[in-house]
Length: 328
Ligand SMILES: Nc1ncnc2c1ncn2[C@@H]1O[C@H](COP(=O)(O)OP(=O)(O)OP(=O)(O)O)[C@@H](O)[C@H]1O
Ligand SMILES: [Mg+2]
Image 1 (cartoon, rainbow, N blue to C red):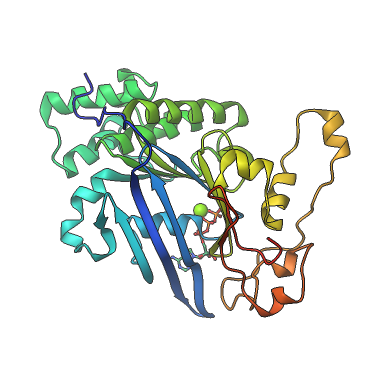
Image 2: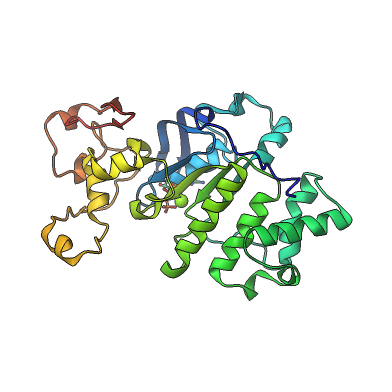
């Protein structure tokens, strides 16, 4: 029995576990104030996966690190299971820290190379005083088993493993404290394509088994399509579009989402030949002094006069689909 793991699958996905409102995270830099996350709101239902997608530097990791209070927020609110996490005193954050875990893009950099795999997975058990002695050993074996590794692996070191196996070790460590919410920060981007699907399948199995709620971060829409119930697209510190996954893929409305989608190759060569690619030119502008009006206007193929003057706000277009574009 997985006694120490939250094995109860939620009966319905209609109750909100994570609610983020008007989140801001600014960094003071030599060149001015860098608005990494600028007024972002979203919620995640219990047992649901929200995909968070956008190019490098748009603020995805900063969202993850701020809502788990690894960074102090500049503004906004984060409710977890009804508790106001930004108003909770650091000394009272321990229950939240065991319920919300993060797994990272580079499983090698995030695993201490001088610790055995057993101790890497056992460390959170020690910190949260969850198991000692034989119980600790058994729990480590149970966690290795859950992520498709075996007990012989406990005495080895991270460098003895492949990228995919190292990511499994990171997942086992995150699961050690029986979390209900896991932020998966580009967990498959550094892996070979052949291994990516295995890790995604494992994450989905674990989600079903333990009723986990995921924020799944990626820069590529194709990676989040299958795992996400809903997707939020980020551009330069803001969410520009959010919808249920199928709706977003079938009816993208923001020119940025359309461009991201058109970058995904279609396996059928006949279809692939006929469709038009939207090429995104230039890089994301700096989040220090972002352009006034719409932040995407410098790269947008559908730009209008109003886009220079007025910032488009997220608006409902029906079916829980929201988009921040003057054309919508
Ligand atoms: N600790 C920090 N101090 C100053 N600036 C930071 C810090 N962390 C992030 N930034 C800046 O905030 C912006 C958002 O960074 P973030 O890492 O959140 O992007 P990301 O979407 O996760 O990108 P990637 O896909 O490359 O991981 C970037 O401009 C980055 O340089
Ligand atoms: Mg990142």
